[in-house]
Length: 214
Image (cartoon, rainbow, N blue to C red; front, side):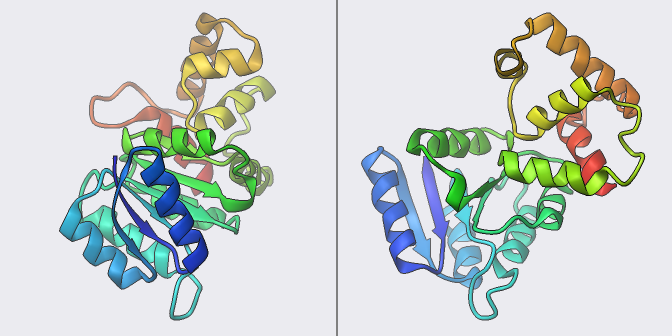
């Protein structure tokens, strides 16, 4: 993959460059602020960009705002947010265009290099990947509403794994279910959330957005 990295920590930025290069990927740019990120992505059109949320000058949401702007300007621009913080509104904003190709991982929770690289590949391939802790907090934020009130506990569990970007076969393995059972749960979730089949929309992303928006 051709990758852009936007990370203000010199040590972490260089570490990512060396890791990805060692694994056979091409880091086309490694920058430390949001303006440089936008320039790099527009110039190199990478397969995926790894973006820290908080970067100079204010260290608040510069990376996020740059990522959202790039997604608006460059359809199909794949972004993996890589942050120390769980900010559910950030995930909601980044997912709002419903196009897939987005991810949100927490730096302190990536225990295996292989897991990080797998998530990066899935985002580059157009999937949506969220850290389980992010998913957990998203569900916690929606428990006070009735947006998902019609879902059974098992359907909520399946939806949570969908939000992590897992395929039906991966969900089946995780929950010790048959592939057919998972397909029935997913179909039921779509029905209860009012998401009919559509050629133009990714219903898995829309299902995640439904509780993010709530």
